[in-house]
Image (cartoon, rainbow, N blue to C red; front, side):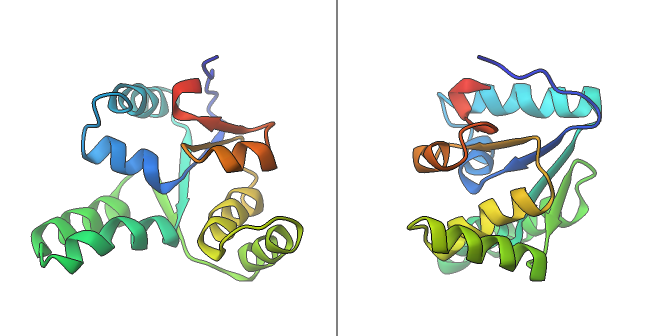
Length: 144
């Protein structure tokens, strides 16, 4: 399928794509590498929610890898390409609406609620359930 990014696009990234990128997953890393290249070339805005940060940092924190925790913290707070969004009332309202309509867990509802509240052009995930909820702009990694 592929996507053609435009400067006015907003791309929401779920947690899994970041993990695949950081860990250089043998199948999905090339997709993420190309996406970040295109984001850089076309100056596309990439957003994610605080849920992503929590999910990514929890494992290294649990095993005491403070160096990796700090690397992730620096990446998400100082990146010129990624905007880490706090959970605010508009996101909460979108998450509530999603949870009342679908059987979503709160973290997934917050993720999708963030994408909706910020009018994401594309929502990139590897969660097939999301594709069933809002198929028009949800893309799995192998579709980008």
